[in-house]
Amino acid sequence: MRDPDGSIQFIDDKVIRRINAGVAAKQFLTSKAASALVNRGQLVPYVFTAPDTLESPRLPFISYPFEWCDAHLHLAGQLTLDISRHILSDGYELKDASAWNVIFQGNRPVFCDHLSFQPITTSQWWAFGQFVRQFLLPLVVSKKRGLKPHQSYSTFRDGIQLDTARELLGLSRYLTRYWPLMLGSKRAPQTAVVAPLREGKSLHGSLYGFSQFLLNGGKPNRTDSHWADYTNMRYHYTDVASTEKRIKVAEWLENTKPKWVVDLGCNTGEFTKLAAETGADVIAIDLDHDSIQKLVLSSNKTTNIHPLVSNLGDMVGGRGWCGDEFPSLMTRLHHHADMVMMLALTHHLAISEGVYLQKIAQMAARITREFAIVEMLDETDPMVQRLCGQRQRNPSDFSVAAQLEAFGQYFSTVASYAIPNTLRTLCLLKKI
Image 1 (cartoon, helix red, strand yellow):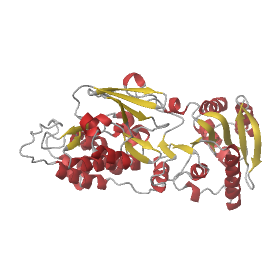
Image 2 (tube, rainbow, N blue to C red):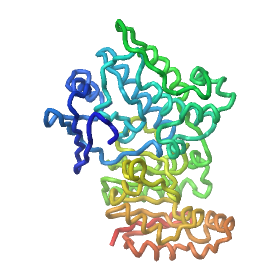
Image 3 (tube, rainbow, N blue to C red):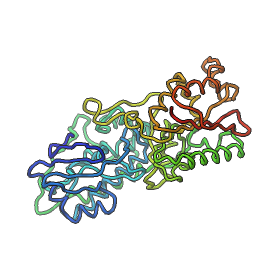
Image 4 (tube, helix red, strand yellow):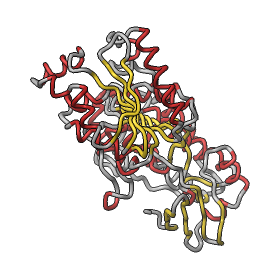
């Protein structure tokens, strides 16, 4: 909506772009290079429905940079560079190198700003500064200082400014491959004057190569935080209990055949992948960055798993103009799923976050159109006892009976299953 070259409108499952007269991107969009980007899955498909009108399919669910892990941001940055290299030989560049112009079809990044293509008229890449702010600096700050993309983008919509990066990194900024970006006065303007193109002497290729070198320095690793290694450390489950839990959840997923599943508190995606194997699209949400990163890296370019980082106890609201340019997560999730899964989650929200059981059940009912699978812990479960002890809560307030009563306001119980060798019960619920 902020592009002066055109306007955008969402109508049902379509995205309509109206292009202003004389916009350079129109010529590119009729070229073979543009068709190649679409065929390679790097650019959202489009058709001209009128001389100055584009129509594209609207993806049913997308995430935003304030919900991304390092791996998301790195994939988005790599796509931006790959497209830039592809269009260079045709004399075009991207006028925008923004993370907000990349959306994910599952785990695969796709460029969505059709009007960002312009002829090269200057010696340097016009959008280089933006690429630095929105990809390179957030990745190095994440790696060196632990401020993850979902956190930095919650504060800085336009990425991390150079002065902010200098302050966050301190003198260690000169010990990384990013040191050339850190030179110069702190008060120097961050937008340099770009010389006009003369005799076809462009620095774009060199800048793309330099950007790739820096981007490689922010390549994410598979880190093992406490929660990212949870499946190897969950001593409260025996092998038999874990296997039986998987079998029962798989059986219920097969019986209900949901097209869309929301896996709340997905951890590294054990049950996300189980749901995806049944053919469902799965939105996988967890507050632990490293768990989501592990899921992203293990899913390659899967198109039916949609991982994102979000704290369910403190969700980010709508962002951008009037708060609805980038709708909140709950707005996007509203009645989006046929099935919501809440496995070993309710006690964390109720006890650790202090959210009433009735509110948790209400959230599940807002997300799913039909079914829910909820794992309920008995009040004598060691985890419930430990969490209540830490917060001076009464375990009896979180009994299975109390949970069933809360969910019973919105759901009926279709089936229940006591997980062997545990104090935990799986419940298959249906909205009433």
